[in-house]
Amino acid sequence: MSAPRPPRPPVGLCDSCRHQRLVPNSRGSVFSLCERSRTEPEFPRYPRIPVLECRGFEPADEPHAEPRR
Image (cartoon, rainbow, N blue to C red; front, side, top):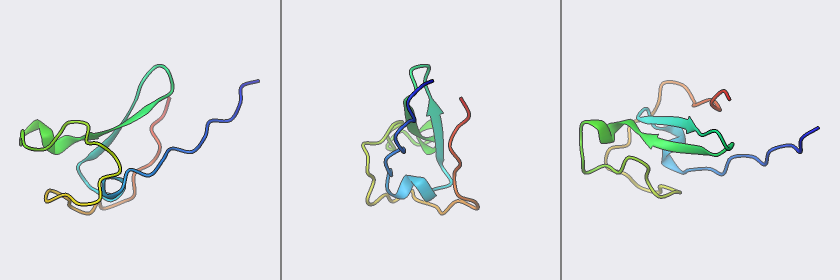
């Protein structure tokens, strides 16, 4: 039986931004990827969290769900 995982810390604006994609790794960590960084290099691929302000923020249509592992 494994111990329950602690909740993922809030990442600020990214949690409600349409450009966020949650990326899990094989060791159980979850990273917040900014999809806007693919076309606009001034946006960091993995921003330092929590993000409190961002000129590229656009509200998501639906809240982000935890990624499947």
